[in-house]
Picture 1 (cartoon, rainbow, N blue to C red):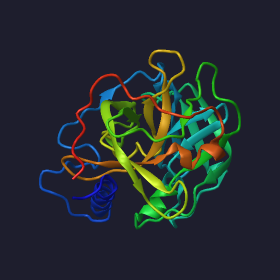
Picture 2 (picture 1 turned 180 degrees about the vertical axis):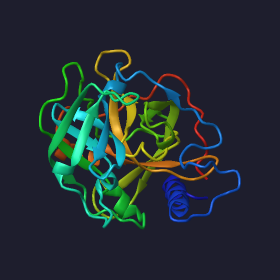
Picture 3 (picture 1 turned 60 degrees about the vertical axis):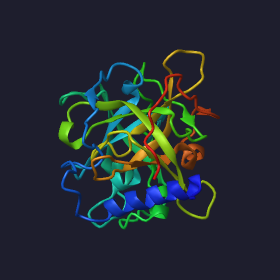
Length: 275
């Protein structure tokens, strides 16, 4: 009988296989990461925690999602910041839009500097995905009333309720979110400490790269959310198992508030079997 770790690693291998091939099952959706049942719904960008999400744009016209984690720090996916030669763009080519909704936005910030996890591997090997993060230092503080979300160093246990929202490619003018998904497990992606990947079943496709994988945190307030990781890859199948980089990978660089643990939701979660 396989151990839990072996099952999770097998799951990761299956996800990476679908990411590296152009073929897909006949019932697979047109966009990866959504699955047969699309749970995404529009959310209000003026409400928490969605107002802490941002649209990250480059001078090349590419776009992703990011999340504010400190007054002048935004985390996103590293691959969102690559040029056509697969090299990272300079900070001067990056822009962060707060409160973007249907072509309008609350405020704009330029980027003063950026730090990345390491070279992005277009072959989608596990080690490359584990380094697929970037921390943007903004030229000024975030708008008043937009609160940074705390980073959660300890990955959520399987079955922990999660949320994932962002500017999907097919709904790029608004934030849509899956608010009824869960963590599936943590898969090791390399030999070094912290070289792991979060596997989850949240609906998210192109454009949601860099979005916060949200988990409830204990701060004494009902409905408070923290960042368990950032979305970096999506599986193209009817029952997707998607990938995020855990917050522990970039917490020291990003700064801001850091939570030690994540709360497991009180409501039961029907977590798919890891087989």
